[in-house]
Length: 556
Image 1 (cartoon, rainbow, N blue to C red):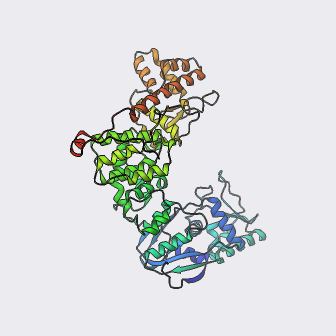
Image 2: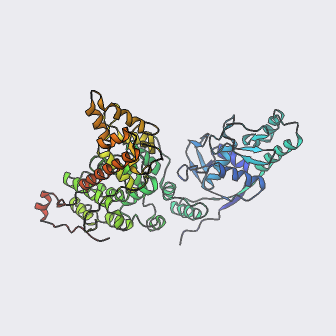
Image 3: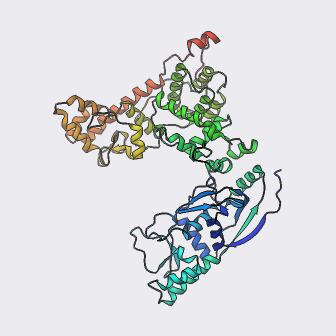
């Protein structure tokens, strides 16, 4: 039974008073609870509810000390002083942030929807609106920041073009009074027991729009961070890893699960179950796991041929690799070779077994004292198939799908070159700069295979890549035809494909390129998985531990 709290303090506060407390730094909205996720529709709905007198829910505060800090809320920068009894928001962050950021944003108020907190009151129709994209705000609209202070509103009205219209003037004054004087109930708890506060947090956040795992992690284990301090939040950890140039890991699907695996817990269990079993089980893990995760990403790039996380077909192996690299940070060359095989085999056979079972057995199968035995255990997880899987090019390209990402890895294995200089393209840098636009379409939608991966190329630039390719094809009779030919081949364009492109036969071009890509991907994946190779441990390990015949093919 959770510990009972002293009776919470209940009160009701006017909106103008709550905004003043936020601006004074007395109410603290912890940046580690939720990001400011509301969009313009959410903010406007809140203002309309207050204007109409509808309930908007209660607030929950935790009274405790707070250090002096610069707080950023959307367009606001608040220099919050040190306080012995600040009110930290446990529930109500989005509402308070919306009110403060909308009412107290710097003036002049934008006339375009620059962010969700640009709000106007339409005095003609008595409703709240975001400004139009063209910036043409009707003169019957009043910026919401003018409505918070009654005295300032009176002065603003005198300069308003519609001040002579009594109905419009009354609508503005009435809106200001309704917003300022609206009261919101709140409860304040005082406790020094982190476990009790965590319990309250989780119970409160079971209602309404539920928090994601990474938000719960940041709320329970995040901390105010100095610039030079190690990461304590998932976002900070993701930023640290993004410096490696492989992209920013997904906080929920990748990072949080990696942290759970790092500590050796079951990554398939519900987060709340894990927390109840061991409160604080991830406290300090983000900082502790940073070196390990750096090594995991380094392995993916250097040994497994995966240059960027946007090209990783399947995230499940990340959790297992995190556990292994925690205890074996510098695997032997033989172990790295076998781990690369294991990774590719798991990617190519993923559809044959349950993702959850694979992760659970993989994490638990890591022996913290025996690197090579751990690797052999992972190899044993790959199911036995009558024959290695045969690769087939997918019908449609989707940068989020595993099949399309395998295509991208096959294209990357050709070491794509810049069509003008012939120099190798830095694919990770290209993806970082262009995101999905790095996977350029070659021709438009008028041909049969236009949606196929055959119509995508890893090339810098904008728009359809056909023009760039034609320039290279057109130069095939120049003084350096071999250079052009090699550049085209590095993008899976054979001589036959280049000729089809040059004569404008786009269907033939894409059909030829589809076959070229399929052949290349099949060859590359077979090489990386190395299905027929001997997966024995190193000779040194065999000599010291005796022979071991791996029994690959444990059914999941």
